[in-house]
Each structure stands twice: as C-alpha cells, then as structure tokens.
Image (cartoon, rainbow, N blue to C red; front, side):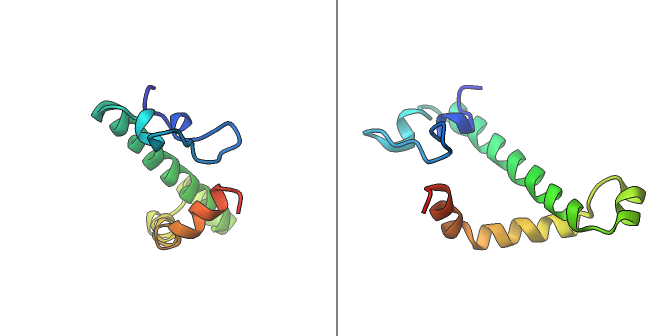
Length: 92
C-alpha cells in the first residue's frame, strides 16, 4: 500500500519529517486516500478493542464484539484529544 501509515511514521512511531513533511511521502490523491483508509480502519479496530475489553464477559460472549455506541464513544474521546495524541506519538 503506497500511502500507508508506514509512510507517515518512522520505525519508532514518530511522525515522518522531511523537507516537505508528510507530503513528500503521500504524493498523490491515491496515496492520501490509502493512508486515510488505513488510519480510519486502525482507529475503529483499536476503539473496538478497548470497548470490547471494557464490556462484561456475558455481553462479549453474546455479541461477539463490542457495542457500536461504546466503540464510537472511544473514537469521539480520541478525536477531542487528538492534540494530546500527537504529543504522545512524538514521544513527549
């Protein structure tokens, strides 16, 4: 995948910086679309993993996954906290 998360980050998970920032690695609309799709999928996968972990065992067994509203609540919290997430991602 040409526009993947790996093109936006270094091996240690910090943001990739070049002369032109991430733009030099995400050089066309297809790359950007792929990167956004990958990040979107990662966000939903991680949020559901958190929500599933917090569900009681009976609900997990009955549903097989976390309730969507609980997963969405994690995403909304992450969105509101994105600047803190950037700081954490940069190792600060």
